[in-house]
Amino acid sequence: MGILDFLKRKPEPTATVAKERLRIIVAQERSTRGAPDYLPLLRNELLEVIKKYVHVDLEAISINLERDSGHEILELSVALPDGKPAAKPAAG
Image (cartoon, rainbow, N blue to C red; front, side, top):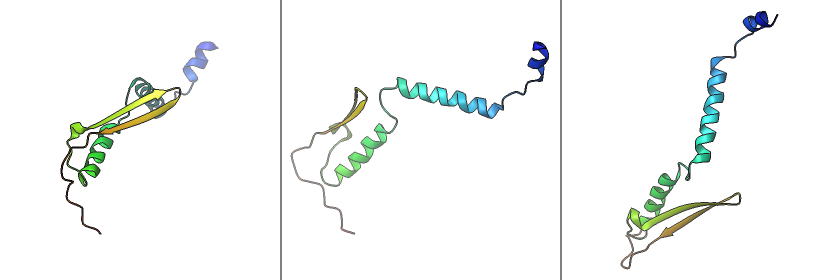
């Protein structure tokens, strides 16, 4: 009866199998990567906010992500230039 049971079994839907494989791949990628995907976007947005008050280059911002005993630490360092601040944005 073992062969008949094998032939009569219902196959899993391919969408379910594909979703499970994708979950495994995404989990593996996240665990092997050093930095989250949002760091470059965060860096650019922080630069835009800082530029409202002080003129700085993208290279002046350093973002570091450290993982230590189950905690993630996001370190942000901005080298501020000597000089005049940027023009103040209009209130509104």
